[in-house]
Image (cartoon, rainbow over the protein chains, first blue to last red):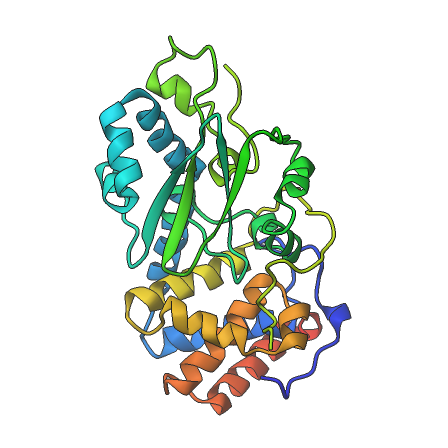
Length: 210
Length: 103
């Protein structure tokens, strides 16, 4: 593909909406791949629609349910920390060919996840990664100056708390089990799940307070 | 030598934490990759290798899903799913259909 030239000006900085024009060579190429795969009967349009619907059906609310269960059911938490891949099957979720490692925040240790080499993310429990997770800035700096990066998310972790950054791989994905907020002893599992944000399960922020 | 994908520890600017909704085009590319994985025509490690060999210029100038698209095209051509000529013809056909809007 290197023989095809394109100017950077043709590449939109804000990606197009569904009915927006297709601009770049690579966007046209993507449509070409789709049409060739359909013509060769490798993929059907219905399968593409279903795959998009399936992706859209997995959101951070899925991960929040797992966290709330771990906060309210000690035995489940132990299973989740011992083997995340197996424990999420109790929610009907499947990591496929990858493994899930769940890391628990405590008063002494705060965990953050990144994928410096690419964008590996626990998609099976959080859905697709936010764009900042895939950005050069986050990938480059999360491992060198994580406290400064967290401050850009409005999160200040006291110097007395150890910060551990986990670099994901294609085969191993991490999920942060945040600390249950103070004063939530009377909340139901469902109410607790509403406090668990996507960013708190990546480790760049804390859950909402009750 | 450090590859274009190997960003850990390099200096970089502030993180843009603003939300970004995925476009329909991006969702389609994501779906193609998921379906080809299910059908055994593409694996995550293969995808990574193809993305990592795009070279610094392409890696740094393309958007995330444009990188995936470039990698997928090369991968499927190498596997003989279709030829470069078929891809070029299809690209030309789509460009003609889109008229002046396409690059």
